[in-house]
Image (cartoon, rainbow, N blue to C red; front, top):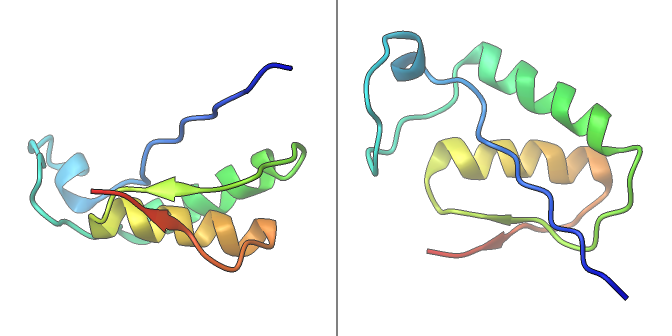
Length: 80
């Protein structure tokens, strides 16, 4: 039996728009980033997922929480 792992980058932030390097700076999603996360959730809903894992940075965690909510997950595993 094989394991399939899907990777999803966080949605857009204002720093992405400004072409600024974010690194570990905790920059939140902007409205378009939230829209992207919702669109990603729609695409991902056509597959079955066992878990969602995210970094603790707000842009990644907000993206993961939006996707998790749309896919029926109660929580997101957060790993440093």
